[in-house]
Length: 274
Image (cartoon, rainbow, N blue to C red; front, side):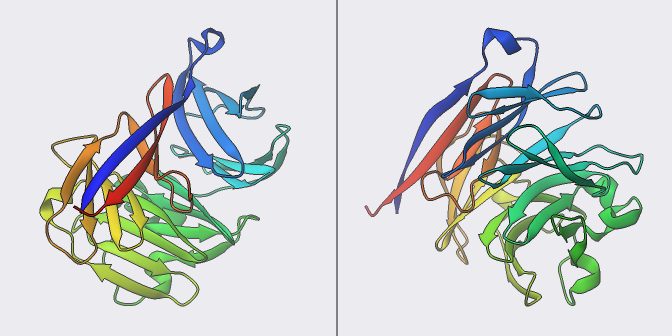
Protein backbone atom coordinates (compact mmCIF):
# COMPACT_ATOMS: atom_id res chain seq x y z
CA UNK A 1 0.00 0.00 0.00
CA UNK A 2 1.24 3.48 -0.91
CA UNK A 3 0.34 6.50 1.22
CA UNK A 4 0.25 10.24 0.50
CA UNK A 5 0.32 12.73 3.39
CA UNK A 6 -1.24 16.15 2.68
CA UNK A 7 -1.12 19.06 5.11
CA UNK A 8 -2.77 22.46 5.43
CA UNK A 9 -2.10 25.38 7.76
CA UNK A 10 -5.36 26.27 9.52
CA UNK A 11 -4.13 28.95 11.91
CA UNK A 12 -1.13 31.21 12.43
CA UNK A 13 -0.88 33.27 15.59
CA UNK A 14 -1.53 36.98 15.08
CA UNK A 15 0.49 39.87 16.50
CA UNK A 16 -2.27 40.40 19.07
CA UNK A 17 -1.29 37.14 20.77
CA UNK A 18 2.45 37.29 20.10
CA UNK A 19 3.32 36.79 23.79
CA UNK A 20 1.11 33.69 24.02
CA UNK A 21 1.85 30.18 22.80
CA UNK A 22 -0.60 27.57 21.51
CA UNK A 23 -1.03 24.82 24.11
CA UNK A 24 -3.91 22.78 22.62
CA UNK A 25 -6.09 22.52 19.53
CA UNK A 26 -9.02 20.50 18.24
CA UNK A 27 -10.96 20.20 15.01
CA UNK A 28 -14.49 19.02 14.24
CA UNK A 29 -15.86 18.80 10.70
CA UNK A 30 -19.08 20.59 11.66
CA UNK A 31 -17.91 22.88 14.48
CA UNK A 32 -14.54 24.05 13.12
CA UNK A 33 -11.29 24.96 14.89
CA UNK A 34 -10.82 25.30 18.66
CA UNK A 35 -7.53 26.59 20.11
CA UNK A 36 -6.14 27.38 23.56
CA UNK A 37 -3.26 29.84 23.90
CA UNK A 38 -1.32 30.37 27.13
CA UNK A 39 0.89 33.01 28.68
CA UNK A 40 2.18 31.86 32.06
CA UNK A 41 -1.08 30.74 33.73
CA UNK A 42 -3.42 32.90 31.65
CA UNK A 43 -5.46 31.12 28.96
CA UNK A 44 -7.10 32.56 25.86
CA UNK A 45 -9.57 30.53 23.81
CA UNK A 46 -9.89 31.05 20.07
CA UNK A 47 -12.96 29.55 18.36
CA UNK A 48 -13.08 29.91 14.60
CA UNK A 49 -11.31 33.25 14.85
CA UNK A 50 -13.23 34.66 17.86
CA UNK A 51 -11.14 34.98 21.04
CA UNK A 52 -11.91 35.42 24.74
CA UNK A 53 -10.02 35.01 28.01
CA UNK A 54 -10.79 31.97 30.17
CA UNK A 55 -12.97 33.56 32.87
CA UNK A 56 -12.18 31.67 36.08
CA UNK A 57 -9.04 30.37 37.76
CA UNK A 58 -5.50 30.33 36.39
CA UNK A 59 -4.61 27.15 34.51
CA UNK A 60 -1.15 25.63 34.31
CA UNK A 61 -1.49 23.35 31.27
CA UNK A 62 -4.64 22.74 29.28
CA UNK A 63 -6.49 20.58 26.76
CA UNK A 64 -9.46 21.78 24.71
CA UNK A 65 -11.94 19.48 22.95
CA UNK A 66 -15.27 19.99 21.18
CA UNK A 67 -18.40 18.50 22.79
CA UNK A 68 -21.07 19.70 20.36
CA UNK A 69 -21.82 22.70 18.14
CA UNK A 70 -22.29 25.00 21.15
CA UNK A 71 -20.09 23.50 23.88
CA UNK A 72 -16.50 22.48 24.48
CA UNK A 73 -14.44 21.22 27.41
CA UNK A 74 -11.19 22.63 28.77
CA UNK A 75 -9.11 20.48 31.13
CA UNK A 76 -6.24 21.53 33.38
CA UNK A 77 -3.86 18.57 33.35
CA UNK A 78 -1.62 19.55 36.27
CA UNK A 79 -4.11 20.15 39.08
CA UNK A 80 -2.79 18.69 42.35
CA UNK A 81 -5.00 20.57 44.82
CA UNK A 82 -8.32 18.76 44.35
CA UNK A 83 -9.98 21.77 42.74
CA UNK A 84 -12.24 21.49 39.71
CA UNK A 85 -10.11 21.04 36.61
CA UNK A 86 -12.70 20.05 33.98
CA UNK A 87 -14.73 22.99 32.65
CA UNK A 88 -17.62 22.77 30.18
CA UNK A 89 -18.25 26.07 28.41
CA UNK A 90 -20.44 27.45 25.66
CA UNK A 91 -19.37 29.55 22.69
CA UNK A 92 -20.22 32.78 24.51
CA UNK A 93 -17.58 31.98 27.13
CA UNK A 94 -20.11 31.05 29.83
CA UNK A 95 -19.04 28.34 32.26
CA UNK A 96 -21.85 25.76 32.22
CA UNK A 97 -20.43 23.12 34.56
CA UNK A 98 -17.18 22.06 36.21
CA UNK A 99 -15.89 19.09 38.19
CA UNK A 100 -12.71 17.49 39.48
CA UNK A 101 -11.22 14.97 37.05
CA UNK A 102 -8.13 13.87 38.94
CA UNK A 103 -4.48 14.80 38.74
CA UNK A 104 -1.89 13.97 36.11
CA UNK A 105 -4.20 14.09 33.07
CA UNK A 106 -2.41 12.75 29.99
CA UNK A 107 -5.07 13.16 27.30
CA UNK A 108 -8.74 13.99 26.73
CA UNK A 109 -11.30 12.59 24.29
CA UNK A 110 -15.03 13.31 24.02
CA UNK A 111 -17.52 10.49 23.46
CA UNK A 112 -21.27 10.45 22.82
CA UNK A 113 -22.02 10.01 26.52
CA UNK A 114 -19.14 11.74 28.26
CA UNK A 115 -15.50 12.73 28.54
CA UNK A 116 -12.59 10.29 28.61
CA UNK A 117 -9.57 11.28 30.71
CA UNK A 118 -6.37 9.26 30.64
CA UNK A 119 -3.54 9.73 33.12
CA UNK A 120 0.25 9.70 33.08
CA UNK A 121 2.43 7.87 35.58
CA UNK A 122 2.26 10.55 38.29
CA UNK A 123 -1.53 10.30 38.24
CA UNK A 124 -1.64 6.50 38.12
CA UNK A 125 0.76 6.20 41.06
CA UNK A 126 -0.85 9.11 42.92
CA UNK A 127 -4.17 9.02 44.72
CA UNK A 128 -7.85 9.29 43.93
CA UNK A 129 -9.61 8.72 40.63
CA UNK A 130 -6.44 9.10 38.50
CA UNK A 131 -5.17 5.77 39.90
CA UNK A 132 -7.64 4.15 37.47
CA UNK A 133 -5.41 5.06 34.50
CA UNK A 134 -8.44 5.81 32.32
CA UNK A 135 -11.90 7.11 33.32
CA UNK A 136 -15.10 8.02 31.47
CA UNK A 137 -16.96 10.89 33.13
CA UNK A 138 -20.50 11.99 32.32
CA UNK A 139 -20.91 15.64 31.40
CA UNK A 140 -22.15 16.23 34.96
CA UNK A 141 -18.94 14.78 36.41
CA UNK A 142 -20.40 11.40 37.36
CA UNK A 143 -17.94 8.52 36.92
CA UNK A 144 -19.32 6.16 34.26
CA UNK A 145 -16.37 3.81 33.74
CA UNK A 146 -13.07 3.05 35.49
CA UNK A 147 -10.39 1.06 33.68
CA UNK A 148 -8.86 -0.87 36.57
CA UNK A 149 -12.01 -1.32 38.66
CA UNK A 150 -14.48 -2.20 35.90
CA UNK A 151 -12.43 -4.52 33.67
CA UNK A 152 -11.15 -8.03 34.17
CA UNK A 153 -8.01 -9.44 32.51
CA UNK A 154 -6.82 -6.11 31.18
CA UNK A 155 -3.30 -4.94 30.29
CA UNK A 156 -1.76 -2.71 32.92
CA UNK A 157 -1.59 1.05 32.34
CA UNK A 158 1.53 2.63 33.83
CA UNK A 159 1.02 5.72 31.69
CA UNK A 160 -1.57 6.09 28.93
CA UNK A 161 0.68 7.49 26.20
CA UNK A 162 -1.99 7.88 23.51
CA UNK A 163 -5.70 7.42 22.82
CA UNK A 164 -8.25 8.29 20.16
CA UNK A 165 -12.01 8.12 19.64
CA UNK A 166 -13.58 4.98 18.27
CA UNK A 167 -17.21 6.02 18.05
CA UNK A 168 -20.02 5.36 20.52
CA UNK A 169 -18.61 3.96 23.77
CA UNK A 170 -15.39 2.79 22.10
CA UNK A 171 -11.93 4.21 22.73
CA UNK A 172 -8.51 3.14 21.41
CA UNK A 173 -5.48 3.17 23.76
CA UNK A 174 -1.74 2.77 23.48
CA UNK A 175 -0.42 2.48 27.06
CA UNK A 176 3.08 2.26 28.49
CA UNK A 177 4.96 0.04 29.30
CA UNK A 178 4.11 -3.00 27.12
CA UNK A 179 2.47 -0.81 24.44
CA UNK A 180 -0.39 -3.00 23.27
CA UNK A 181 -2.98 -1.41 21.00
CA UNK A 182 -6.29 -1.72 22.87
CA UNK A 183 -9.81 -1.25 21.56
CA UNK A 184 -12.10 -0.79 24.56
CA UNK A 185 -15.90 -0.77 24.57
CA UNK A 186 -17.01 0.78 27.86
CA UNK A 187 -20.65 -0.25 27.37
CA UNK A 188 -19.94 -3.97 26.98
CA UNK A 189 -16.64 -3.94 28.96
CA UNK A 190 -14.97 -5.81 26.11
CA UNK A 191 -11.36 -5.49 24.99
CA UNK A 192 -9.58 -6.26 21.75
CA UNK A 193 -5.81 -6.33 22.24
CA UNK A 194 -3.21 -6.21 19.47
CA UNK A 195 0.54 -6.65 19.82
CA UNK A 196 2.49 -3.79 18.29
CA UNK A 197 6.04 -3.81 16.84
CA UNK A 198 8.76 -2.38 19.04
CA UNK A 199 9.58 0.42 16.62
CA UNK A 200 6.22 2.00 17.52
CA UNK A 201 6.81 1.92 21.28
CA UNK A 202 6.83 5.42 22.70
CA UNK A 203 4.12 6.70 20.34
CA UNK A 204 2.31 9.76 21.74
CA UNK A 205 -0.46 10.08 19.15
CA UNK A 206 -2.58 7.52 17.27
CA UNK A 207 -5.30 7.49 14.66
CA UNK A 208 -7.50 4.61 13.45
CA UNK A 209 -8.86 4.37 9.92
CA UNK A 210 -10.60 1.12 8.94
CA UNK A 211 -8.02 -1.66 9.47
CA UNK A 212 -5.01 0.68 9.81
CA UNK A 213 -3.48 2.35 12.85
CA UNK A 214 -1.41 5.48 12.26
CA UNK A 215 1.10 6.42 14.95
CA UNK A 216 3.19 9.55 15.46
CA UNK A 217 6.66 9.41 16.95
CA UNK A 218 8.55 6.87 19.00
CA UNK A 219 11.42 6.97 21.45
CA UNK A 220 13.84 8.03 18.68
CA UNK A 221 11.86 10.18 16.23
CA UNK A 222 9.31 12.66 17.64
CA UNK A 223 7.22 13.46 14.58
CA UNK A 224 7.62 10.44 12.33
CA UNK A 225 4.29 9.12 11.03
CA UNK A 226 3.86 5.37 10.61
CA UNK A 227 1.10 3.28 9.07
CA UNK A 228 0.45 -0.28 10.22
CA UNK A 229 -2.24 -2.67 9.14
CA UNK A 230 -3.68 -3.87 12.46
CA UNK A 231 -2.41 -7.35 13.28
CA UNK A 232 0.63 -7.07 11.00
CA UNK A 233 4.24 -6.73 12.18
CA UNK A 234 5.92 -4.21 9.88
CA UNK A 235 4.88 -0.52 9.74
CA UNK A 236 5.57 1.90 6.90
CA UNK A 237 7.01 5.38 7.31
CA UNK A 238 4.73 7.79 5.47
CA UNK A 239 5.81 11.26 6.58
CA UNK A 240 6.43 13.73 9.40
CA UNK A 241 4.10 15.78 11.58
CA UNK A 242 5.30 19.02 13.12
CA UNK A 243 4.81 19.81 16.81
CA UNK A 244 2.33 18.13 19.14
CA UNK A 245 -0.27 16.01 17.36
CA UNK A 246 -3.65 14.37 17.93
CA UNK A 247 -5.59 11.82 15.91
CA UNK A 248 -8.99 13.06 14.75
CA UNK A 249 -10.92 9.89 15.46
CA UNK A 250 -14.34 10.74 14.01
CA UNK A 251 -13.42 13.33 11.39
CA UNK A 252 -14.27 12.38 7.83
CA UNK A 253 -12.20 15.22 6.33
CA UNK A 254 -8.90 15.05 8.23
CA UNK A 255 -6.84 12.44 10.08
CA UNK A 256 -4.52 14.41 12.40
CA UNK A 257 -4.15 17.89 13.84
CA UNK A 258 -0.85 19.28 15.12
CA UNK A 259 0.36 22.52 16.65
CA UNK A 260 3.55 24.39 17.45
CA UNK A 261 3.81 27.56 19.55
CA UNK A 262 2.33 29.65 16.75
CA UNK A 263 0.80 27.42 14.05
CA UNK A 264 -1.95 24.79 13.73
CA UNK A 265 -1.80 22.27 10.88
CA UNK A 266 -4.25 19.65 9.69
CA UNK A 267 -3.31 16.43 7.86
CA UNK A 268 -4.98 14.00 5.49
CA UNK A 269 -3.66 10.50 4.75
CA UNK A 270 -4.59 9.07 1.38
CA UNK A 271 -4.19 5.41 0.46
CA UNK A 272 -3.46 4.17 -3.02
CA UNK A 273 -2.60 0.61 -3.96
CA UNK A 274 0.73 0.33 -5.76
